[in-house]
Length: 366
Image (cartoon, rainbow, N blue to C red; front, side, top):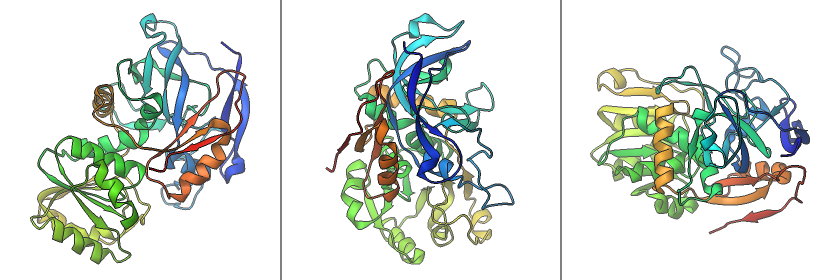
């Protein structure tokens, strides 16, 4: 095993120049930890928002901050990780050596099955935009028999973990009708696939040019996103005339006010994003008079992720890969990801050990 490795290191909040390609020491696993040789890692909004410091602070929405507040720099980014266990720390089962694994990148507030995430590899601890990463042994899930490729597995932790957390916290059941906003984005498309896989009827909100791919992912109905939220809500009401059992919302903004009246009594609205606006007016009577639950959802619990890992091991979900890049092309990958022109995940391949390969790009357009 080499002493050093290439890594994408965030040195401060800011633009792309704040993310530097460096040669850094290979970390050593501590007690109860494993060292994972990263075979694939994926790009997320979390990476870009953390680099920009775009999360704000309570009472200071424009303050530079990571998703949990301060970030200790330098920090190796990357929360989506798949690979093989290259070494184990003291007290860790040697049987994990060589295992193909999917890494749960969440850092939790406890050890129980329903613990909540309070940190993330790539943000509060070093992540997988490198040749190696350290993770807790109980946070890696064996994928030896999974039909998914390592690149496909690397697409799962953050986007699909967040989507799974939303479906689980929203208690979505088979035969229920669920509306999913931002359905062509990372979390939205994951939610479409996971909701359809459990037998729900999916109404997806997306742009016209991405309709076919969203239907391919499992949407039964597609509503075209309109600048006027009233028109979007009206279109949703027409394709779901009996009302919505649940809404999985990764956008936020004014659609909540317009669409809430179409949620059935006892329905659930689960929100995990605010790209459409962090604040909106809300008639509270629509909530309490109809026993509607408004649920905030950040990532997933260990139980949620274990269910996702089971789906991955069995091949019940298969992420769409939009483009592939070498780690050396991370700035190009983040720029392309931010344009949101493609449906699917952007995957990075780190080099092994000292040998960084030339930056190359392979894009899947169909």
